[in-house]
Every structure is written in C-alpha cells, then in structure tokens.
Image (tube, rainbow, N blue to C red; front, side):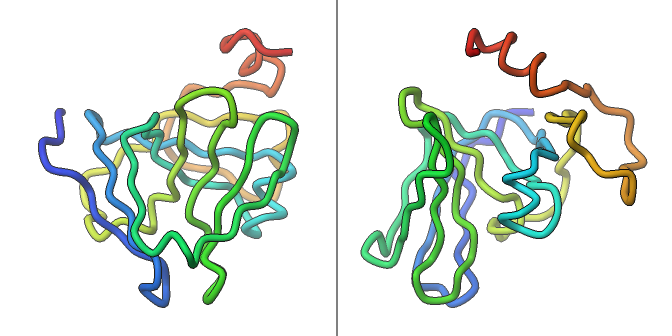
Length: 140
C-alpha cells in the first residue's frame, strides 16, 4: 500500500515533530541488546530511509550508539526519536511517534538471536539473527 501523504508525529512534550514519507505500512522489531537497553523492550520501528524531516531540531540530542549508527532523543522529555545509520540514508522511526496508528503490519524481527525468552509476538514474521542481518546488508 502506498502512503501518499507524509506521516506526522511528535515527542511526548511536542518540542520535536517528525514528518516521514513511507511507501509501505510495515514495521519491524529489533531485539538487540542495545535497543532493549535504550527502551526497555524491543524497538518497534518504521524504516524510512532518508524521507524524514524534523522540526524543533534544537531540542534533539544525539548519541553515537555504535561505530555505524546513532540514536536521537528529545532533550526535554526523553522520547526516542530515531535510530539512523551514519554512512547510509536510513532512519528507523519508533512507530509510536506517529499520530496515525492504524493499519501497521509487523513483518520483520532482527537480532532474533538476542531476544530474551520472556516475550514473543503472535505474528509470523521474517526473523533474522544479527549475523544474517549484517550479511544481508554487506556489513561485518
């Protein structure tokens, strides 16, 4: 399904707004140790490549969480705003930021090898280990 108008969203205190254009209604879950430590559970996110704009940029803090990626958050309320790659046009935006919450479909889980046993999703999804994910994207 192609989504013609940008999705709009905001952080908890509304200091930062996000607008993203996506051509799908899919979202993925990341079970890696870093995402779970960042948010207390898996990151449920929409992949947006570089079709993302933010307003209130002065309120955005950025943390380099690895050699290849960084995470953004609102400096006021702490809301998680994005995971983005440093060298490629890729954003993963937490789905909960968007005003529109209907019709999303969980279809992919990554770092399934790091998922703890205390939760699971009911949907059948594509499941990739960290090694498989890096191999798929040509990273080591």
